[in-house]
Amino acid sequence: MHQLDQLKQFTTVVADTGNFKQLAQFAPRDATTNPSLILKAVQQPDYAPLLARTVAAHRGQPLDAVVDQVLVAFGLEILQVVPGRVSTEVDARLSFDTTATLARARRLITLYEAAGIGRDRVLIKIAATWEGIQAAKVLEAEGIHCNLTLLFAFCQAVACGDAGVRLISPFVGRIYDWYKKQAGASWDEAARAGANDPGVLSVERIYTHYKRFGIHTEVMGASFRNVGQITALAGCDLLTISPELLAQLQASEAPLQRRLDPAVAARADLPAVHFDEPGFRFALNDDAMATEKLAEGIRAFAVDSAKLDAIIQGL
Image (cartoon, rainbow, N blue to C red; front, top):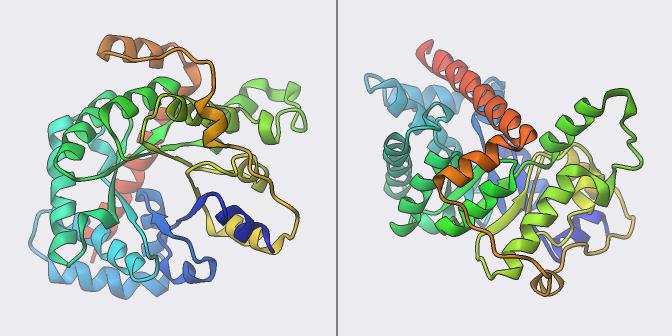
């Protein structure tokens, strides 16, 4: 049995791509997208007709409304391939605006529902800023489920759990990137690989906290740089994996063991932790890695959102 099938025995595998024509071969349950992945997809010849049709059908509408139509068009295609859920992201440029995030999230859900897709099959992706988490709290109360992304700090995960968020996406690879860059020439790849990888350790801490305190938020490790990070998190609720790394897992027959176990985590000796807004902001500020990677991630997604805007305006 290859590693991908072994992994699926105790972790829900999610495909991290906007390339829905590539999905079926890996049989993931869910799929996630983000502005960068959608931008990458729309520039491929295979997807040009879908983009052109969608833009033409909604010509004359405000640009942000047409963009949401494009995002949902890709989501609908993905939902024809995966049996579970698709994650569709709110514009990263709204990451510090709770009211605007709520409006965009509700519009995305309305578009999916108009196409016959129930709320149970969509996760609205929102950056895990304080404002984003507060928007998600309201949306969850309305039955609109959320995937809080760009999550790097423990305080972000705690606040999401307290808000009743359905799912979080801690970014393993970007955490690894930061620590490797900081260490420079002193970085020891072998010593910081697998279970000792800083990104893996971050997800393990969040997973243990959630299981210990009965928090129902799902943990979905994301942003992987190598297969070792994935296998070190076997047993995590979900893992969202790029097609390239899914293919590597599929090509390996090496035995894979469960690493994260909810029963073991539930017995962990941990203090209860909660954050109000000042406490959250201080804890995030106190974590240089999380502060830098959150800001960098929002900037990068905002740039790609602007590029997608420009492509749509050019059609």
